Amino acid sequence: MAQNKTTENDGSVTAFLNTVADEAKRKDSFDLIKLFEEASAFKAKMWGTAIIGFGSYHYKYESGREGDAPLAGFSPRKDAFALYFSAQFKDKERLLADFGKYKTGKACIYVKKLSDINVDILKKMILNSMQEIKSNYP
Image (tube, rainbow, N blue to C red; front, top):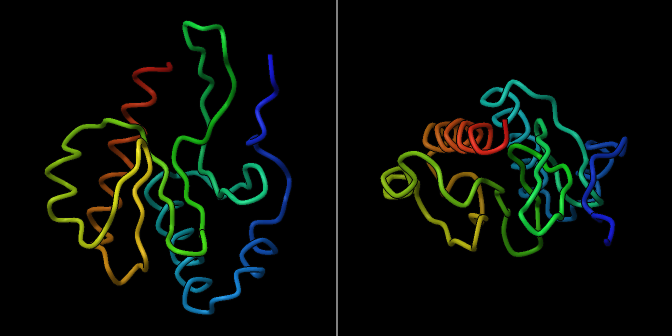
């Protein structure tokens, strides 16, 4: 079975963020770290080369595939921040209704900049997503 490419590592979060060319995105990234650390109670860690994760859990699918993943995280991509959450979590639709400007993927929520969203809602989303993951992968 193939090895997971996105694993927790000892890479420097600060060094990675200092490579973000856009100054506003770099500042938002450091602000997001504070917000995620406060909400999750976990310190920021690098996962792979471009994901900043908070906490971790071990998953095992029926297919036999297993590995570790961050409980919550984000990546400052060129076009938008990818926020990583559980695909479903408590009050997701209600929280997204008051979240601000965003787009969604399967389990990601994409935001252009921090000023586009309600950070108090983001904190609730982090907590609810982490609770969902912990209940599915105790």
